[in-house]
Length: 103
Image (tube, rainbow, N blue to C red; front, side, top):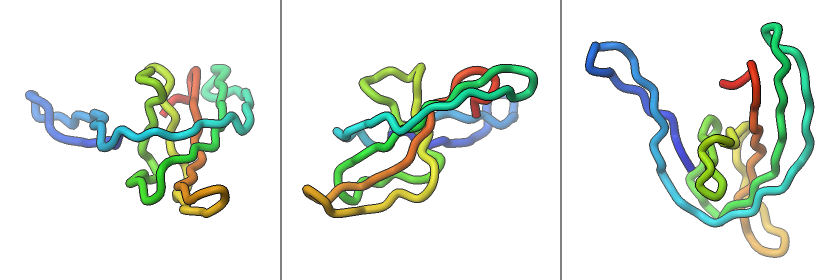
């Protein structure tokens, strides 16, 4: 789990980086995909349901790096929820963006 951090760079400008805040095991399941044009470029979105251990500190705006592949982050959308089913887990919706619509 990575969280956006902002600070000043050597020239006094704003610098944005991603800091790893936790490493956890979880389950990622595909939940759908779509394509559209954004700023005259084709973009794609893949949506995922992500299941993490209970009470995992994950927040809207965080990004999830799966299997160490930082080239395909999943961005957390909406508020995480804790639910019980075949065990207790934290559930989040996430989206992987490709093309002109990358945040």
